[in-house]
Length: 310
Ligand code: CP
Ligand code: NVA
Picture 1 (cartoon, rainbow, N blue to C red):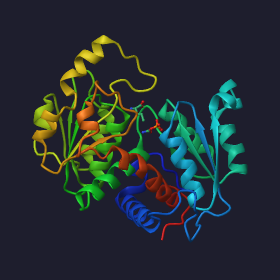
Picture 2: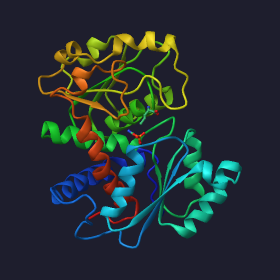
Picture 3: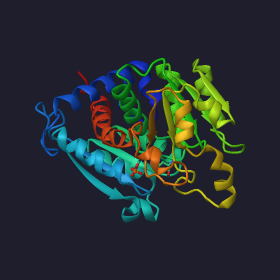
Picture 4: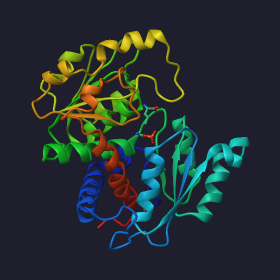
């Protein structure tokens, strides 16, 4: 059966753990080497990934391209606007055609249904590179970063989310319920996470608290995480910014978290809005490691999708 990576639950607890272990292992094995050097075993030699973007990207675009190069394969980056997809060719027909040319497809799009439909008609693995609903690749990198910084497995840690109840939070909630870490999400009223995602995580036995008070969320947290207040395709506006202000990540808020707490942000950051410079550039910030780990985590995702994991 074709293995798609549309959400974290698709891979299940064991699949996620295997990918995370592989990501740590491959990162360590190539430490200090030039970034374009192919990993010794070149596990994806001869394989090609097509990355399709309906929305802008810096990290996802470059990290998937580099991931394929390091695994011995290659990648092509496409904008949906430059494809016939942009002028009405169906997702299903695009999936059928691309499956004849490439070995895997990564898609960043608005509607989650689009990536699901692509997967339904593709005969090669499809990877979710962010939708309005979720961002699973990001959370693989986030977990990897937390494990590196804390020096222990993510299971049993306590994560505090501050701000908008968005796609990144949804994948954190899903990951928490699969891998057994606590999520305390502080959001303003009307900006809570999707109720379907919350219900699924709770049904799985995940420890999830939805709160209003930012301070209560960060108390003794091992991880403090936020994201832009206005995601791609959303309307911002003064009203939303005003509602989000109490959730800004400040040094005072960080001081309430555990002494060795890690600050994460998927980037791009809006310094002075969701986070202050002193936190972004401070000693607890792991945002650059987190960005780097997109590369290492996605190599493991690609290997899992193509059934090449250990
Ligand atoms: N974090 C993230 O997905 O970044 P890009 O939008 O730059 O890909
Ligand atoms: N929530 C953000 C994440 C960007 C990587 C967005 O969807 O724009």
